[in-house]
Image 1 (cartoon, rainbow, N blue to C red):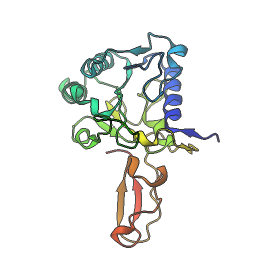
Image 2: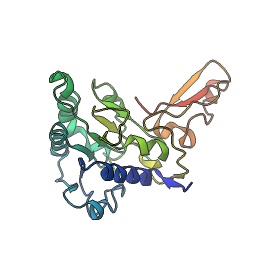
Image 3: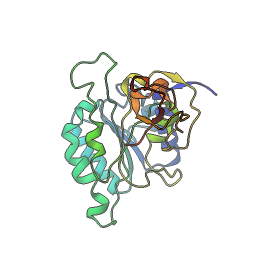
Image 4: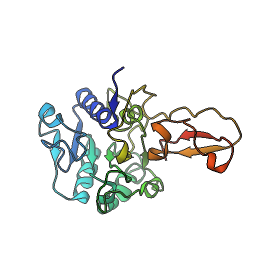
Length: 241
């Protein structure tokens, strides 16, 4: 099987979702002809056209609000925030609207959107480019948070559910945030099922060590580590928070 990077896996998954379902749209700053800051959408503007791959103004609040509006009207938007440190202006739309839509309408409306935002250090970027605030989103009821650590996981975590490709998150909003430093690391995507955490490693003693994202050794579960706490605890890749 051909090796690919995490970014290539995201791009492949987005292209497949857009082929499967015309309701899948991409929104974000510089994601059109430029292909996005990490080139996750490179070539998709040329392939699917400007009506489905939309460059947006420099407004994270407006971007998230547009994604919520599209989602409740039957589209399947994938919105890209360039870095997690830029996401704070969009918190109102994410926490008070997207995450609560199903509950506040008693199920009449759903919000099947995916919000992508890389996190973490390791790319030599300035301030607001290395934040890791995924714990904040994990405490928002109604929002699913997925953090792929490998291309295999990224392929299944970065697309919205569609009529032809049922995803594990059903029609709920989800935030997919991958470690920025791993976006160009090549591995063979021996894919687990989309959204299904990788199997934990062997358990030599009674302790478990939970990891996610950049904290997963080598981009997969069960890669050892944790010996600083004594013994050899089992290491698992959480993927979902």
